Amino acid sequence: MNDAELRRRAAKVVPGGMYGHLNAALFAPGFPQFFERGEGCRQWDVDGREYIDFMCSWGPIVLGHRHPRVEEAAARQAALGDCLNGPGAIMVELAELLVDTVPSADWAMFSKNGTDATTQALMVARAATGRTKVLMAHGAYHGADPWCTPSLAGTTPNERADLVEFTYNSLESLEAAAATVEGDVAAIIVTPFKHDSFEDQELVEPAFARGARALADRLGAALVIDDVRAGFRIDLRGSWEPYGVRPDLTAWSKAMANGYPIAAVTGTDALRGPAQTLYSTGSFWFSAVAMAAAKATIETLRDTDGIATMGRAGTLLREGLNEQAKSHGFVVNQTGPVTIPWLSFDGDADLSVAMYWSDACLRHGVYLHPWHNWFMSAAHTDDDVAKALEGTDQAFAETRAHFG
Image (cartoon, rainbow, N blue to C red):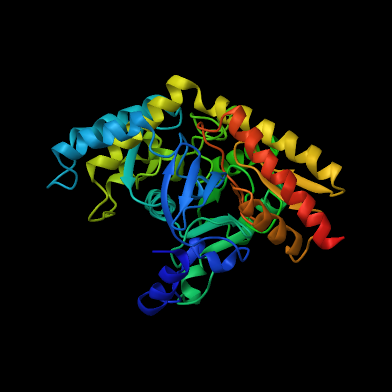
């Protein structure tokens, strides 16, 4: 069954044929919608085309597709059971691992998606403070529930009424936002760096991170780090740990289990009591297979220094793309951590150049994205990056020829 036929069939039984951030209609014309399999840092679509994968399933694949240690742990647990009448012992083992790994974590609660985790974290903050307002950076993505989804379709104004926006990396803006709802701030929620789609990424300024921590303390509010996208690709201990900034609550998901569905909230002892008061649950939140995969993933990243491996590959990719862009007469911006990279073309306001280039990359076996950040995995070797750069170089040449 090929991609075109699957799209035709899906159009009859799925609203729009596809929905959400995986809808290939939002990307360049050549992007496939349906995939057959993955192995290491490669994916194959249903038409049999092979790609070196720099999206890593939009973040979950951190060790490479079908990593043996993770698959073995998942299979071992599956042989015992997955969804049972209660969690398996693996839940306690995974929570202990997170507490041992993350300095700001004294406890952990589990769910399935990043949206679950960010929403749960805000519930804990509100339970702890008895307040309602949340300070959030303008344009930041924290999930797809009504309070945070980028689209207003199907939502009501009341569901956004408790959000107060500030400008990322501006302490002045953050302080001003807090002043507008003085005495009613439950939480400041912030991503470890600015990774809004369609925009160049922006690393956090250490003074902003420390200022956010100080403001939360002054307000008696919770500092919530949304580490769903960046977690386990910058620092295993938490993405703001290198700045000496520890949150009260952290939301995790994506890379946590190398593709198995799981999310977590970790928090400090001061918030343990309020966390206990929540009624927050789900039919599949306590399934044991994903927990076993998560434990194996985090241990493998720790034992193999997987983040450093990703950093090396990401640096090689960034350096190679810079050289190629210059040689073909393009000015590009490469932003974000090298483990979570993105490339944009200077002056490309309508993304026409990025769309054409990413489409050309696909034709040469390299899967990346025109308007969303990419992801590295520990499966990307020097040889894989070199092979990918052969494809991107041809894509630059074709893009130059097309645009003149």
